[in-house]
Each structure stands twice: as structure tokens, then as C-alpha cells.
Image (tube, rainbow, N blue to C red; front, side, top):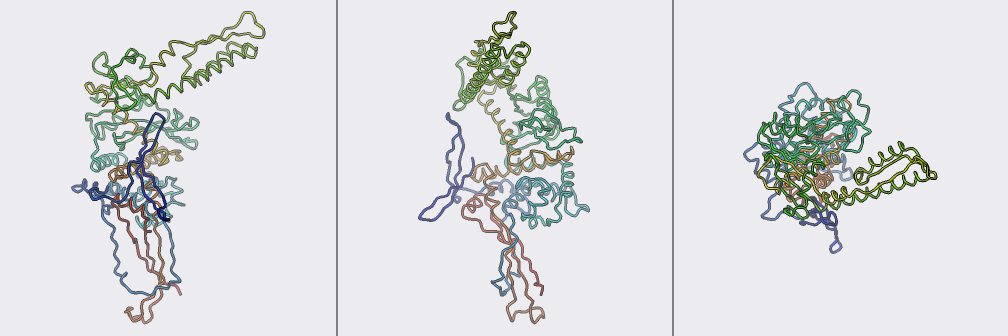
Length: 604
């Protein structure tokens, strides 16, 4: 569910309000419907921060915290002064709302406290935990390179006031060094986040979802042995890449990740990722959910030896072993358009779940039909070329057929093609090409379209539960989509292996902030898509209201008979409009009105 801003006019005046919108599937495709129109909190509702605060009442709360209302006092503000209205101006406009929110999430997760313990203060001018915060907040709010953080992003945000680090001290050398220092504490960070997220959201870690993706490089990467060519999920086989294995909970909250060489097959990562998770969090009874690309008999035996359970997809070819069960009628509907059936394995240690989806069936039928028409048209073209004498060599025709079968691989088994050299030419023809449809292939596709097979050693669990647990694997797929599209993990411009790993760690931390914000929004009744909230928060700015002032005559001036003119800079935060006030109210946040006061003497 996500937020949508609605605008309309009533009595000639514009009004803005928020609608909570849900996407859902129908037989005609995806549709959207309004779940609720959002206004102020009702008396029976509670803000998201109130709910999270209750969970943290007996635990460590971040200081300073977004739970607590901002407080600003300056005794000098009571001083009566004369203001020259002609000289009043507004300066130093900065982005405030998004970085203030992100810094609050950083402190809520306790990352500032953890890194302060793990990265003690030394001779550095800017503490390394602060540098790590800058890198993560930059990736979360406005993903860009370290060079752009130095030249553009940091200087136009209010982080100078929130962190106390001036823009001149934020440069690429310091940011690169911060990446190197942060990578040393990857394991400690993962363990800390597992505990902290569990406290905040009452997470369960019995069901673990694991998937692998890849991200590509720009550059030669000559000094990085991990950068290899492999199966690219980004449709960039021309680029070197690395693979990333990510483990998330059933809610999509990240638990840990590992980086692999770019040419590593998915199935080769399973043992390493399982051992890594068990070394950090213990060998408890866990259920691993994986896609079919991870599956091999060796991996399943490895999980069984360690006492682990699994629910995995299987290759399409394995479905043929269960052809007799596809035509039976004892299917159980788990949701509209999806049916499942349980089949026990021969040894009694495993069960198989047959599933079929009407939407998937229609999709596969359309794909098969498109490939069939494309391949038949190409075969007819080859026949005409052979009959006209343009195609004379049988070996050349076989190579052309091979390329055609590769392009139309979904329908390659539907045709039986014979290419023979003619002993005596008929007209201009030197070879003969004959093809025909295979009835067996058509019969099998008619039965198997829309079907897939799951495999598990959880004996005694109903097929509906097994299927729903497997479908949770989409949470891992969404995690990759968020890191690639929203947090821009690709392409990687770093060349050194350790610097590449540090870049991925920063993206991992930014994703943790993203999911934390999503869970907080869900408890606030705002859906779970943070992008709209971030964009609206970024419209809240800070700036300096500059006032040329003089003390009123007759006021004490510490012995001075003629007080000098001076400028008073009030660093203020803009007041949000009514629509943004609704969002802040539901989140339970109170914006600060004033950040600082700066007095400057006027140079005469």
C-alpha cells in the first residue's frame, strides 16, 4: 500500500489530502483501490512513534530521539531590540526534513551508539561514526557518489547543524577512509541490527528467505579478482559484476548478506551463506526458503545434516515426474486463481507441493504461442530459401536451425525438423527441409502450463501453509528491487575489492533504514512505501532569517553608551503545509521551529 496525494477545489479554494491506495491483481491485470482517506488521528488511534515507544519503554531509547519533542531555549531571545525592516532577509536555504528523519532512524536503530563503541575517537578531525552516518544518510536520501556528496549534496542539507560538521570537512578522502573503517565492523553491525530490529518490530527468525542478485561495474576492475562476467540480472552481460546473497525475514527485514565473485553459480553460495548465518546467530531450527536456482541434491543434503528445514522451488523438468497428478481433481484453493496439491515423496522424508495459477497459465500460453508462431515463420522462410537454391549447404542449414532454436527456446521442442542433402537437385534446390509438430509436446504443455513444483522436508504441514511460506520469497526480490532502483546500488564505480564491499555495506544500511521507515509507516496507518513520505519530507527546509538589530535606548549595555549594530541570524525550519502536517501528526513527530541563533557584529 502507498500514499497518494489528492487535490481538489471546494468553494473556489484548493484543498489537499492523502489517500491510502492498495494495488491488487485481477483477471484483467493490476488495479488500484482506495483503502482509506487519511486525516488527523482519531481518538482511538495512536501514532506510530507511540507504538514503537511502548516497545522501547524497558529498553535503550536513542538520545537525542525523535520520540521526544524538540526543545530550544535561548535567554537572549527575551531581549527587546529594534529591527531595521528594510534589511530583513532570508538566506541559506537547506534541505532539512529528509535528513532530519533519516538521522532519527539512524539513532533509533542505535547505530550511532554502536559505532561509537566500535570506532573510538582518535586523532581524526571528524569522528568515524559521523562519517559513516553521512555516507548512509546520503545513500538513503539522495543516492550519489562520494564526489557528489562532497561537491553538492552535503552542502545543501542541514546536516551541518544536525551533526556539527562543516561542509569543508566533508571531502572524498575522508569519505573513502570512512568506507574502509566501516567495513571492519560488518559482522558486529549485522548482529546489532538483528537484536534492535527484533526489539522494535517483534520479528521472528524461524523462516529465512534467501536469494541472489548481481550488480555490475563501470570500469576495467583490473585489481579486483571478484569482478567477473556471469549471469547478469541487470541485462548487462557485457560488464563485469559481483553477486550478492541476501537473507531477509518473512517481513522483508534484512538479516545479513554476503558478496561473491561475479561468476559464482547460485547453488554454490548456499553452504557459505548458511554457515555465515549460523556462526552469527546460532544453529537453531530454521526454515530456509530458496528459489530453484539454489537447488542441488548436495545443498539439500547439507541442510538436512545440519538439522535445517527447507521449502524450495524445483526445475521445470522435475515437474514431468508428477504428470499423473496434474490431471487429478483433489486440488485445494489457497487464494483466488491459485490451487495446490500435496504429494508425498517415495522415502517419506520429503513432500512435494504442486501449484497451479490461472494467471501464470495465461501468461505461459501467450508466451508459447508467440514463440511457436515466430519459429514456424522462420522454418517456412528456411524452406523457401532451400527451394529457391539460396540455401544449399546442409551444414549451414543446421547451424541456422540451432540459432533459431536458441532464440525460440520455449518452443524448440515443439517441432521435429529434418534437413537432408538431395542426391539429385530438383530445380534449384540442393537440400530438403521438412518439419512437423510434435503431439507429445503439445499435450504436455497443455497440462503443465501455469504449474510449478515445490519441495520440502516439512512433513505434516498442510500445502496451503507451505505455499504461502514459499511466496514470501518475493520479499527478498523486493529487497533487491529497492536497493537497485531506490538506493541505486548499481553501477559500482569503485575498483578496489574492499571498497566495493564497503559500498555494498552502506547500501545495506540504507536499506535497513528504508525498511524501518516502512514498518513505522505501517504502524502509523500510512502504508509501507516510504518513497512518497521521503519526497514530502524533503520539501521541508531550513534557513536563516537575518535581522539587522539595535538594542533599545535606555537598556543596560555593559558600560557601552552606544551599542553597536549587529545581525541576528535565526536558523529556522519552514512550517509544513496542512497535508504534510497530517503525515507528521500520524507519525507522531514534532518539527523543531528553531535550530540556532547566531549574533554577528556589523563591520563598519
